[in-house]
Length: 341
Image (tube, rainbow, N blue to C red):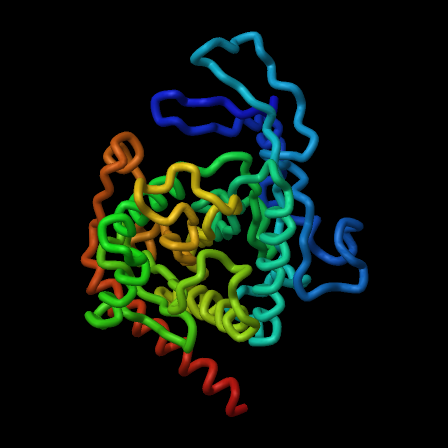
């Protein structure tokens, strides 16, 4: 079964994709993403877009089963796009191992897939992300991210639009720009900055070791970035991944979630009296959500978080920011020692 089902209480669409149950789970002797599998270029590659073998959304979805359909039980075809974004042809390489030139190519693959998916008028939101580690459900260890093109705007993005839209209506300013300015003024939670992006633990971090990367210049999506900004984006995402690995000297699991504005130009639910364009108040940013609160302790998203949406961070964001800063310094020391050899 593959279809969308509507939840009228939360006004969300749910993807039902029962065929994904049969996808392989960390196979030991074969990887479809490695050279020689017959599924990727035999000559090797730096980065590569791979059609998802078990997509939750597809360009030719089956007709939904309407047996249970009613005024409240609404279904739609599971239309959309799902791709795997391979970071490298080497099976055991980590994102943190990649050179500057390599991550510049990765950033351009993100741009390419965003543009490609956005050209489909049925797709309303393009979500680029990475799940890392078995604890967050990774089924293939080969370094990769993913891209989903949804025919709807997901709830978290709608909430961000509502909050940022209200702030814009009330003040005429971008909420994300203001938040970044306050974080940079405070300085305690800033971990790394380059010319174009800031990596920091947000004041309102929901989980231990959570970080955000926010563009310093007001851009609503990745297509508005210059070549230099794209280069800097690839580098700071790689550095964030390296930082997490140095935190406890282990491959650290995380969810990397890239938040671009919805692809439709005009916002149909813009705040009254405000600018109807997303570009006025949505701001490109990336959220890293780690599921661990210590090297050997998982932070479970339990009843309060999942059932009520009321998050409890069991740690102090300022203290975790200091640990992350120390981990980033170790990244710099390792790179400097490597460069000197």
